[in-house]
Length: 115
Image 1 (tube, rainbow, N blue to C red):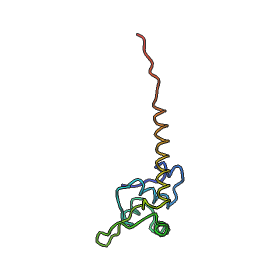
Image 2: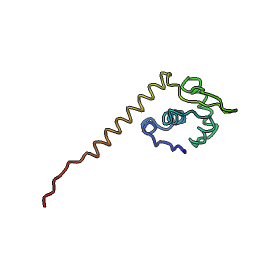
Image 3: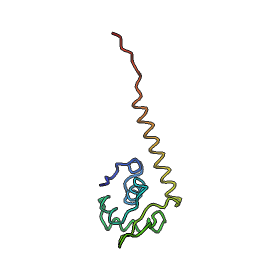
Image 4: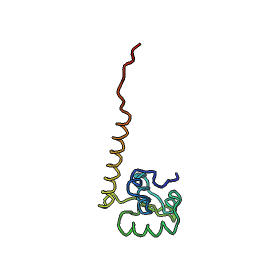
């Protein structure tokens, strides 16, 4: 699954900085955990850029280690982290707003045709 920049509501609203792209990737895949290599590949992000911002995310506690498979360590968002909780709320609010707009745009008055 290749991940395209600025295709999600969160990235359209807040911009597509490397940190937000990484966080958004996890938000879009909440039930999965990923290795660093998987994330780099799927985000099509340079390794240097990824690792520069990854260290910040780990230090902030937004990302946590979930398990190891062989030599690979897998990670996911720490949903107990306050910043992550707020980001999830914002993502959900943006989705609700977009859904409301979509529903309104599809509401069309029914016009009876006379024959």
